[in-house]
Image (cartoon, rainbow, N blue to C red):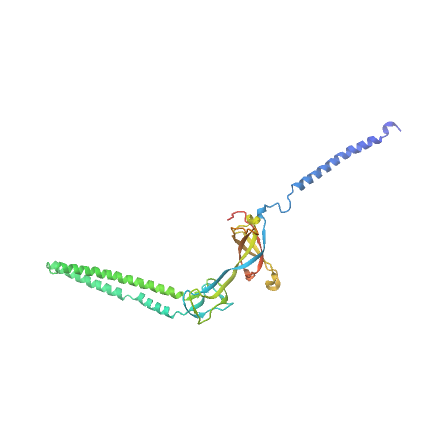
Length: 315
């Protein structure tokens, strides 16, 4: 064997190291790129501005918005109660009628006076007669001087002016009579208690035949078509909740829903954010108005409200 054909072990190892060095360098470069990508990648939930996250408010209280205690504007005797507890009234429906015989009689008198034109007709006829007498006196003096003395002519002219003023007075009296008729009619309406909104009668305080005074409670009415959902948020979330922001309301206890099924979330919007922060709890009161579909939300129940903040067009 010749010397040139023999490979020295040291030389062989050196060649292997030279061939593996590019491979190690490439591997290190890939690892470095991966590490940079991991460091630069934002953590979960940080890809959105903090102010755009949803705010979940738990243990919110459901309250009615439209509820009222109905009373009469007049003192009198209850003649009719049109609805009992549990019955529904539409907007403007009569709920209670107070006895109104006397005021109805007054309205009839007022209608007669308002439609009476006798005073106007008489004044117009008297004015025509006064005008004829004055014109005849003038014509007599034109035919023969001083037939009618000047003082008498002046009295005739004043009488004409007087009758014209009497016509105006009669017309004004009729206008006043019409206004009194309207006043009496409006007073008559106050003997009737009507529903201020569509709702259900929740309580009746009086019975037919009982006497009532002004402002005495007669019955109570409430509407469940819209409700207020009220809760408290932490002051640190205050910048993420604004008036008009949309919300989703979920009833906490599904047992109150038909079939014990989980009721659907109901949409609404924030109507009020309190201007004060509770000093002890460091929380702020907010409430939303929610359309109460199918009467899912009942007064007194609790619900969870999720607020979706509006970044733009804040109020």
